[in-house]
Picture 1 (cartoon, rainbow, N blue to C red):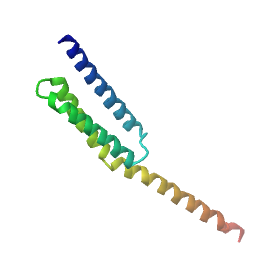
Picture 2 (cartoon, rainbow, N blue to C red):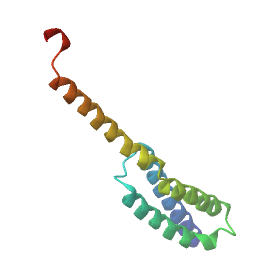
Picture 3 (cartoon, one colour):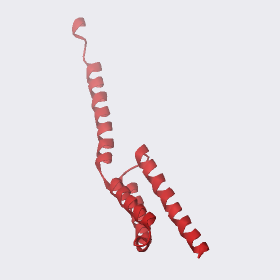
Picture 4 (cartoon, one colour):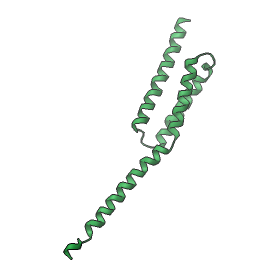
Length: 110
């Protein structure tokens, strides 16, 4: 029984560490795009499916599943993706304005 409990704790600790790593990576913005976020979300869903039977008897597993579901929701949120795509557009617009202003002759030299 002790070996089973030890293995169970090891598995839960592993998933806790993995979810923490994914959350940290998400906060740092290290996911390239929505496709990568969806793939990670699917992997989290698979992990949650494996953990689901243990939620009835263990509070730690229940908290882990709730944290995983919240993380999956954050990953699938498109707000960050939209904000990242806006920034380059603004940069391109600023570059275009600079190019137009550079081509125009100054008013004082005319």
